[in-house]
View 1 (cartoon, one colour):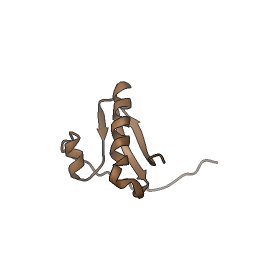
View 2 (cartoon, rainbow, N blue to C red):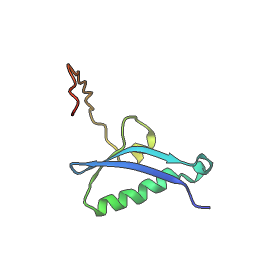
View 3 (spheres, one colour):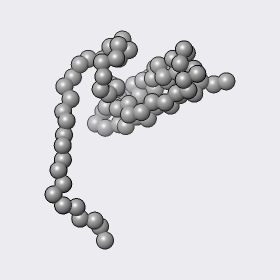
View 4 (cartoon, rainbow, N blue to C red):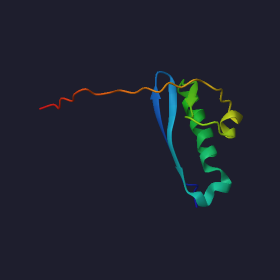
Length: 86
């Protein structure tokens, strides 16, 4: 049986953002998410992207992968009106 895991990345301006990860929890001892990340990181690197954003949170595995702390900005947008296309 194959390991079942999937990641969804968005790319913008030389950065790959890991948006969502899923895996079959029955395989958690085999670390399918980490295995997929390592393969994806190699592919992304080959394509010239040097930064992978792993999202919020200070989970220890992120630092083992080389993460550094960075400030994040929250942006709030208030709509005063919405015009729908006709």
